[in-house]
Image (cartoon, rainbow over all chains, first blue to last red):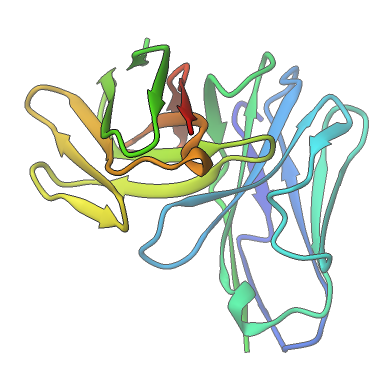
Amino acid sequence: GAGVSQSPSNKVTEKGKDVELRCDPISGHTALYWYRQRLGQGLEFLIYFQGNSAPDKSGLPSDRFSAERTGESVSTLTIQRTQQEDSAVYLCASRQGAGLGTQYFGPGTRLLVL
Amino acid sequence: EDKVVQSPLSLVVHEGDTVTLNCSYEVTNFRSLLWYKQEKKAPTFLFMLTSSGIEKKSGRLSSILDKKELFSILNITATQTGDSAIYLCAVLNNAGNMLTFGGGTRLMVKP
């Protein structure tokens, strides 16, 4: 497609379960970013990929969070043993070049942990 | 093309000084402006500003947005060496599908 896509659009899970969120960036975009947005708050930067590598994972909130990217394309964000405070919208963005610049966002995955 | 410009590019001050960082933007269909602090790791979120003239404050940091003049300032009072970082400004468009970052201001606070 022409834009960034994310799936699922909504996810409700029970505390303690693992969830996997998927992001398909714009074709040809080498940089991919994951953000988290809690209700009424700003975008928290989680992790970014340049190609398939994540130079900096320090934004991930805890070791329950991990992300990978393959083929310089699809990325998955995995949250293990979900907690209620993980409830948020998880946004993915992509960019053609390196650096922060202008990023194009997907529609997000709304995660609710019960 | 959307554009976000930050000034100054870099700034060196001494502990206790007050600094003002500037961010101006030209963005189609503005939704909100965000400030981040970046040390030797991922940017950490500071403020999100959506309405003009309403100051947001967190400890020694404060920020305000002027949607008429298309700029925002980030103030840091009584600076400390731990404030040394790159401060990033970013603007989110109304559709929420595009975030444009400025080039950042590198702040160094000397003891």
